[in-house]
Length: 243
Image 1 (spheres, rainbow, N blue to C red):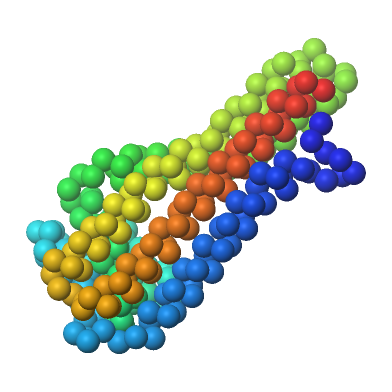
Image 2 (image 1 turned 135 degrees about the vertical axis):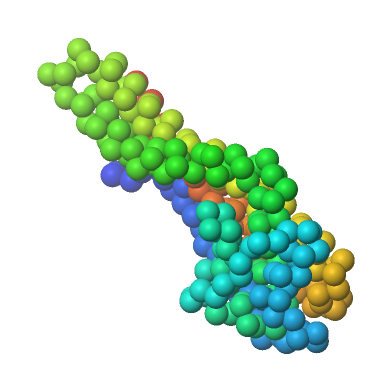
């Protein structure tokens, strides 16, 4: 129904624009981070120092801050209660480094304060991973078996198998949706902490804010991609039933 001359138009119309949007946001993060990584902040505040200041300002203790190799590999690990900062953040005294480090410290503060969305995200991450692995095999098996004439008596069962696969993929959409408030809240906490603790000057704060805003849009793009892929898979399965 959605294939013309061997071309999947649902992919082109729905998914491809979201992927292009994702590529644009990713490129914007890299360029913005690079721009504000070339500017030294006047207070000489490194990413590691900024993360510690944010934790202290929020009364959070017991969180380790460690160095990890790579670029933009920064993250907070709730299992070990460790903030890991990359090469361009840990010892770097730049607005970009301070912004990213403060953001990761914001996640540690979220856990310490039992911020509901991050607890929900942590609770569903394992189910989401399982669902994402099972979704495509279930969809493909269901669609293939629906098309076998000798098994037409079981076509309804195979249809529901494929639909179950689509719903499993839908868990990815739910995960991305829950991730949005988590990431935006962490960036808000970071910006507030930078201003309240005077980590950066006014011009430098604007640079850190631009880095965080660019990073936040990547999560919007991820939600767009997963949502459009979910819609495409749903249309693909339901159209096969109609055929």
